[in-house]
Length: 464
Image (tube, rainbow, N blue to C red; front, side, top):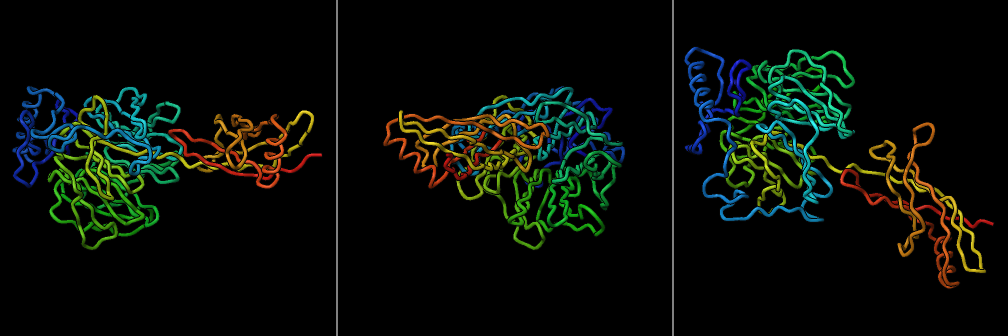
């Protein structure tokens, strides 16, 4: 019971039960129930084999946009989601999407619109993904029944697991524990950080779990129980019972996204072609996220709680929904077909620690010598080498020098160091000298697509 075919069956397109609504499938595509490979009684197996024959005849052509919609999924609207600086929630974030039938993963920088393909090897029907704090990407290589890890440097490895069969949803703790929705085994497993014995998360009655979401503060793991049309919540670690998250009319839940700060859980209600929002800690108040023209939505991703990205599987696109108001737009991926998993990579926060410097003024000719300009750069608590730091006055009218952070012999620091000699008129030199002595100097890291900018100041002493 999954949207993915059994191992010994040739068809491998997404398959699901039909939505409860009267919405008809698009021409050339089977209904969702015809695509679902039930493993139960003989009449169910016969239905599956009929669906497989039709799929093999039809092929795996990518979907066209739904009739009556433009490229964005809003009638007559052009695809205009070119990211702008200062746009809603995008910042320096990047968005990853798994392309199910193309067997690859794409990455899009949301501000610049630059698209690249993640270097992978041997993927077959990739689905859900997760990112760790180092920038390593974990991918459910679903038809190979394995999880692959692609480091920030592009090195691919296979995560050691036991007995996985069609893994789907992934969730990572801050310490690196990996939770996997082992869909064909109707369970969720946990792989400890750094290796160790795989364990099964205690659950009851799951039938093909799909999306996962982890709330470490509340010690809660949310699981989209696809066939049972529900979302359940279990303790991520330790004992405790399973509970069902209160929802109304849910059909075939797939992707999950958690806004832990606001205690909101977003659910892809794929059978109803919508996304719903429910309170993460129970209670009423379910709401439908305002979207247009979704068809079998799958993965979800949040960008700092401001924008919701939805993998619109049936329409071969990813849409962005501003949660603080605004129109739905299509994220400008090129050549995307059958997207499933989504994950946002936010720019990592950085910290500069500037250190005191010295200044000496000479009068003939007028010159300033600034010595010992230095700043340590770290990202998420770890040294960040190979990045350019600029040094100047606090009022930003004069750049003194710049240097690249490098590691010291112990490998613990990433410090940029330089000295500066400044010449000019006597008035200019005197003014700069007085400013440095009274206000100090400013070190700045401008940031990159992966790292946020940071600045710091330090005092300047007179050297005699």
